[in-house]
Image (cartoon, rainbow, N blue to C red; front, side):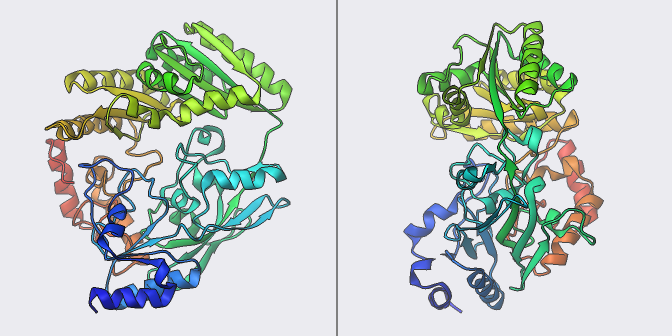
Amino acid sequence: MNRSELVRELERIVGAAGVLSEPADLLVYEYDGSVDGAVETASPSAVVLPTTTAQVAAVVKLANKVQLPVVPRGAGTGLSGGAVAQAGGIILALTRMDAVLDVDPIDRTALVEPGVINLELSEFTRGNGFFFAPDPSSQKACTIGGNVAENSGGPHCLKYGVTTNHVLALEIVLPDGSVVWTGNSGDGAPGYDLTAALVGSEGMLGIVTKALVRLTPVPPVTSVMLAAFPEMDAASHAVTSIIGAGILPAALEMMDNLTIQAVEPAYHAGYPMDAGAVLLIELDGAAAEVEETSAEIERLCLEHGSTLFKNATEAAERELLWKGRKMALAAMGRLAPNYYLHDTVVPRTKLPPTLARVHEISEEYDLPIANVFHAGDGNLHPLMLFDRRRVGDVERVLEASHHLIEHCVSVGGALSGEHGIGSEKRGYMTLVYTGEDLAAMAGVKRAFDAELRFNPEKMFPKGYVCGEVRGLRAQAAMQKHGIYPM
């Protein structure tokens, strides 16, 4: 089947308005939110925008017939290349499947299609007294389907958990085109937890067409505190003390001075421009509990040298403080044309030495690095600022990135906290996993997708999706000597 015939068959399934095939239309689908150089761009044969589960299944069956890969895609805000069609084929863009199908205030659940925008789900359910807790910084644009694929987190995952903690059941289209439900509305169901296996699988096992998600009651009282410190080291120790005292904030975020320089002039959030770092701490719950815990947090911050501490109890002031944090990435355009946003995790106790290492890398590579991250759970987001038009800048950023990732893994950290592996970090998987580990993961992939057509060339190091243990061991040895296959 040639390309013209493929397009006609796809149009027969979803209608002419649901198929994009012209080069100009496909151009935007060659990318996601990842940085050029870290992720290779690739063009699909066609992009299909279905509106029903039946259409998704029919497209998958057609792809099987013509032996083409299928790549599911949400809003394209991902940062690891997960929605890029590395091997070509068909992109299934699920943004037109955007209905909230049901809200059950008794069971505290919502049934949604994958194209529902994250923030819009919370806005839809707030009138019933509920919200959807996972809140990535891109929540104004990212979709629930994408959140499921990447197991997204956000500032409030410290208390409420990441996406997997809020997904009860999924309707998925399997690689053979069949449609199944996994999970149920209750906890502790017998049998394998296939829902948990699918959340975070990056579209490699199945395509989500509906999700039954858990809703969280809106807390009676919310308070947001801003604590400023002369340096990041003091702020890091304050974070450790807060968690060590048995306090579990709803969110505990940190921003360094470079981030403040970008954010404050743009959004006037109230961050002191001379601070070395600020903490944004949110508490929620019963009024008496929030008041008592706020006082304890203030005491701990002052013990660690906080130069400013203020408590925002009014909604408008809270929203402004959070606006500065949520818009931090957008504000980086004031400092540099491009940035490379990292997503590594270290134990909280390793924050001070890790941030010191980030500073060393910044100086070694003459590379400004802004730090804005989920300090409460050690999920770092260093932003390496550069200009991709300048010769050598991309290469310098990627080399610096190797050293950053190596350090985080060496102190007991992880490759990703919420952005996923995709094609960006597949070459680093052997830093964390043995050949046997990767062979087991590849076995799960093949159990769902024996022909390896769903989102190929993601997560696994190149050439090893079949679980070739000897090759994986050799690759691990190469990486110990500084050789990184990408």
